[in-house]
Image 1 (cartoon, rainbow over the protein chains, first blue to last red):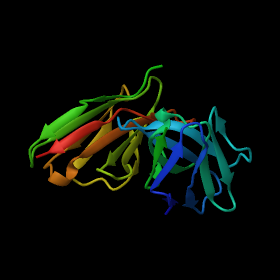
Image 2: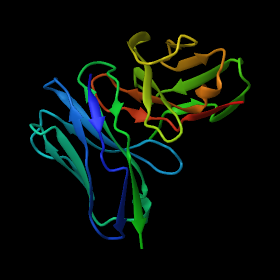
Image 3: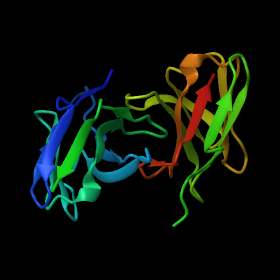
Image 4: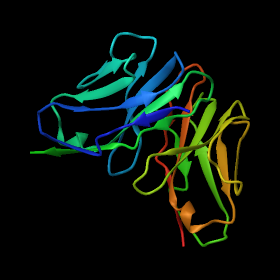
Length: 115
Length: 112
C-alpha cells in the first residue's frame, strides 16, 4: 500500500520569506502523480501544484515550486515570497495512474505566516 | 469556472438517523470521488465512480452506500448514523484523462 509522510506538523515563516514543506512517499509503482493541496480555515481543499512522476522537470506555479526526487521518493513544496494568505494546512497527496484512482494524503503541515 | 457543488453544506442529525449527501461534478467530468475528513485528520477515501460504475472502494462502512446517476451527479447515503460519523465529507471530480481531482466545498455533518 502506498503511504505518504509529512514529518513537519507545523511550520512558521515570516512574510516575504521562503519556506519549504517536506513530503516523502512509498510506492512500488513507476508511474504516478503527486500533489500539494492547501486547506485554509474555510476547510476548502485547493489544488496548489501537481507533478507527474514521468517528468523530470520540477513543476512550478507562480510562487510555488516543488523539488521532486523520484529515487529518494521525496516531494517538497517551496513557497517563495510568503503571504499572509498562504497560512493554511498543506497536504501532500499521491495517486497512482489509472481511472478513478484515489488520493492518499499525508497528515498535513500547518503553515503559519507571521508579520 | 464552474466548480464542484455539494449539498447540503451543513447537516445536523441524531444518532440512528439517515442522511443523504449530494455532489454535482464540474461539467463534463465523468468521475466522482468521496472522502471523509474527521477533526484534525487528513481526508480518507471512501469510494469512487467512473461513468456511473463503482471504480474503487476504500474504508467505507457497510452502513454507507453511494451511486452515480446518468447526469454524473452522485449521492452518498448514510444510515444508522453514529457519533463517529461526524466529519467533513468532500466530493471531488475529475475528467478521466486528467489525473487531477478538484474538490467541492464539503458537507459538514454533525451527529448528535
